[in-house]
Image (cartoon, rainbow over all chains, first blue to last red; front, top):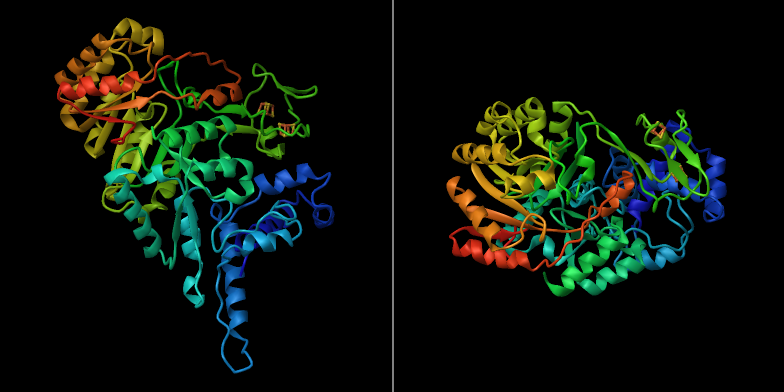
Length: 235
Length: 292
Ligand code: SF4
Ligand code: SF4
């Protein structure tokens, strides 16, 4: 399965904004999606900013769980020509970029052609730990073909001996909650520069700002430049 | 009154922590990087970069005018928050929420699985001791839950407000902004006698790390300032000093609050020189909470 976060965020947006709060009508949403949000920027901003997100809010986490479970039990029903089972998995390798190119606009606020979410990772989490809690809340053991959870992080988040201890605490927590798999992708300055140019691809990249860490793409250009400079100069 | 709760903080004490930011501070440091932490009441922030000029923000009080951009009249605005609901981009956002002790604890405990043995909660600000009853309750409950409790303070509070809480606190980060009382007054709006007195008392009851924001040319000008700092820490029996590098990351937030920020800071290498002097004086010195 590819694009779990997009699907969960889309269902959550429809549930919240169309049915619960009635801020948007279904017809309006359809029109916006058909025109890839051309002339609907305001609506797109509402979808991006006023809807619950997987990795952040209960409603969207709930949809992620439901979608994952429906998918897993459906796949398990089928047999191949030699009678073997198909095993469900949530990993995209790099197909989330390719499939994204072929996928139209979504109610999550994602425009046509933008990458889908990577593996089981949320696209718009509040923090790395809230992301991990959401990811672990999905019943990963139903995915016998495996899940893939990629965490993009800059090297200075866990520097030094204390940093190592914190890293261990983070992993312990995640696996204790039922996580099955997690890879860390430690990025360097060149990746950060690329993330400045293509924020959509790097929504989940965590960097150290000052006394705290944050998602790189949420920071202003000035702050991003400062962080890049810092990593380049190793200060 | 809280202005933020941040999960997964790794620099405000040992382990993985949740930081609870109290809103309201008795000091007005000219370099403050969290200007929204200063006032003890909610404030409306406006982010011009996020604004898409859709002009959906209608103010019942008439505080919002639309020309080719959005103009906010802060004298009329009573921070009711209605425009925040109408704004699709969250360019208009109210900072500061009244939360109950239970609400804060719930958010803190949600992350418990990541705290391991030494992680937990950090109360920061603003000045946590300004809301001393609230802080006392939160610290007590956190200790009951066996979390590590850290408090970051400016030290500027009556001793009665500090005293009762300390038994539930594992570590205090205590800010020293300037060693000279006159200059302290100019840079922060208050003198430092009460602060230094509290430092001695706190350090005898609780593990204390002195934190020093180094704003070269403002609060630390030359070696003599550094020696004064050493003397203050020695008198209070504090061994650990954490030097904080000055940064301008808060600059944009001043604009968002309709305030000005002008500070031209000179040579930022001074901090390494300070570290060297303080180490020679026998202190354990870190820069920005880390060893590199
Ligand atoms: S917070 Fe209320 S009073 Fe202030 S600008 Fe917004 S709508 Fe008007
Ligand atoms: S509603 Fe928000 S985005 Fe639209 S003009 Fe007002 S502040 Fe800007």
